[in-house]
Length: 309
Ligand code: PMV
Image 1 (cartoon, rainbow, N blue to C red):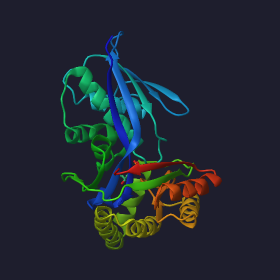
Image 2: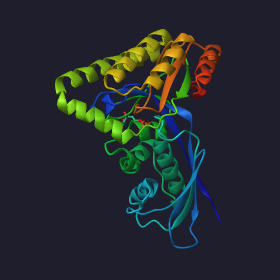
Image 3: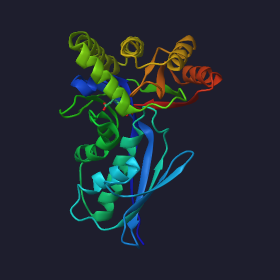
Image 4: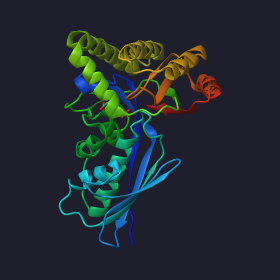
């Protein structure tokens, strides 16, 4: 039996999460870690998938009425194909789930790529980004599209909802240290909380989003110029504004503080917040190891990654 394979990468939002849902730009980077998927023909007439996580395995049937959101997401993605035959999938996640690193999008993109290979469909990464929105909507309700776009395209990019992705040329690779708070974060919930704040105080929250947009535009210039110090300062400012939106937690504050104390050029929450991950920008690999040790000494599962190399 032949097996088709696909992969999707995780992402880190360098600047601009949440405001990106409301039309402002974000600066994001694809991670080398993500998800992989394998697809082969089914022998029992049903489409089913096994999702293999760090600590658990989940078996689902593809159905829009499935109890598990992964079964519904799979059904939503399959609905974008014309009469797909029954298939058997195995999906492996190399990232923590529910942590702000775009795990669901990485899985959706990996599944789409493997399905396309199995079914003989050709699609550009940008087309895959659009197709996998159907998958993301099951988890996020109102996704900006940044996660699935970065999962499909990778690299460092300037993203604005509904507009073509603008790749960013990275003058100096960014050495990042990602730390997990150990607290679960639910994107749908956090996006909903921010939307409520915007509804209650449109002027104040709108201005806050505009301030984040200015940080994002300056961040892009800093990345293009290789000005890591400036990028770090912009990250700290963005973190402050995310805290003002009540997206940080005492644990995330402790981790960001520890990273800065250990020499990080900047540190912030990434992704939905309310838990999940923070990341710090290091001047170089040696500095990254010092920051990593500081985060680990607080018990945070952490890793170093380089983007734009
Ligand atoms: O937490 P994650 O990896 O799902 O990232 C969410 C990013 C948000 O900006 C909060 C939502 C979105 O759809 O852009």
